[in-house]
Length: 99
Image (tube, rainbow, N blue to C red; front, side):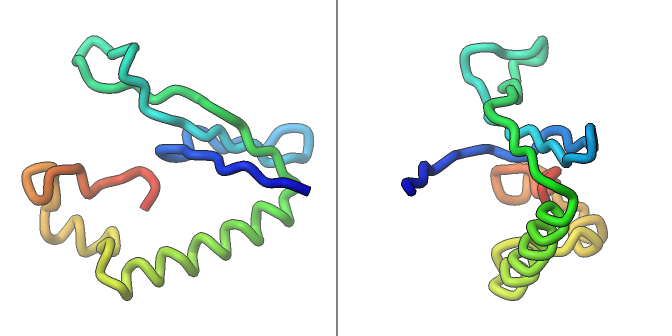
């Protein structure tokens, strides 16, 4: 069995449909800009899994977020809000929809 790497800038929409969890993986597109000339997020792939698989994945992601916080690579959301983090403090927006 071979595996392929999949890149995504984030997760767009997560829905429950037909008893399965569906997560849209999104990537930034440089060819299609929105009216503000900002990159546009476009669905690149969809991950479909049973609810118990989603819950196991969610638990694994929570553990990784804790590791990222402990390593100082990201800040907890409540700390970001208290510090007023924004794009002027580090180049990119610290208010990622993924953390």
